[in-house]
Image (tube, rainbow, N blue to C red):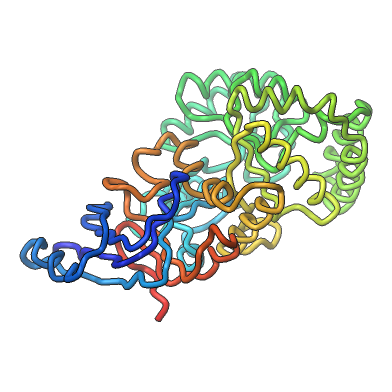
Length: 399
């Protein structure tokens, strides 16, 4: 059966490239891709129908008073396939899945990735941690040999990247970094406690999650890093006590932040294009204010940012949380367009797929969100969703 074409008529187009909005545009979708974009004219729907193949149907969406943006990506989530409907309802057409806490996490991750409906998914399968991992289902990189084997298996399974966690030993971490380069699987995740931030950058880690390792590196009190390691080591014995101590140490690190130490490190992150996915929405109020300031400074210095939420972890619901993250990024100092790009163009660039998605241009994959109000005037308007197109099909349409 020939798939339906979709036409959005007379819409204001915010294509995600950074260009000004284009008024009164018609965007035609065919076979899962953006087929054409151009000024709307009288009798547009009739002309489009005349171009369709026999049996090809057409779904029309009115763009009068509406705004079309690229589909959104949550670049740090922990989701199972049953979260697809919630994600799509909030305009999220792509997800970087950062690990599912389940014994068969790799199978579940690959099943979600291979579906031809729902959000597009890139995934790592499982977290890579040390011999005493934070999560029981983690892959355990004990030494160089085990780390290299984990990376090779990830490549064989068809996973998209590697994610390291807090307790990966130094030797294992640098072995993973080597295998990352050899296999082409990007190294992402936390900065392990046994590794310095500058060492992670030199090793080629592509993204850092939750600002991991940065407040530690920017503290004027080196002893606090040992306190942090001691608090983290309690995790397997008492998560409550470990969490309390970790929070206390982190607040001390924030209080001892030294700009003269931090600025050269942030400059290094920018020069090496080490992406930051700060997941501000996942941070508690005491740490969030300092994180907002740090993210603003990163942005001003050219450190690339990704919007992510940690959804599926810590009680964060997939979907709406991404819109809160965008609002927090604006509070940190990004413009509405820049915040929007952390969930559209940025993910495409990070994944090396900017010719496929991330902007609304001819030939791109047809993942689109139709809004009832202008997100460039108020980023909160990304919540005002009129329709969502995923993989070329209208999957959400609000009357």
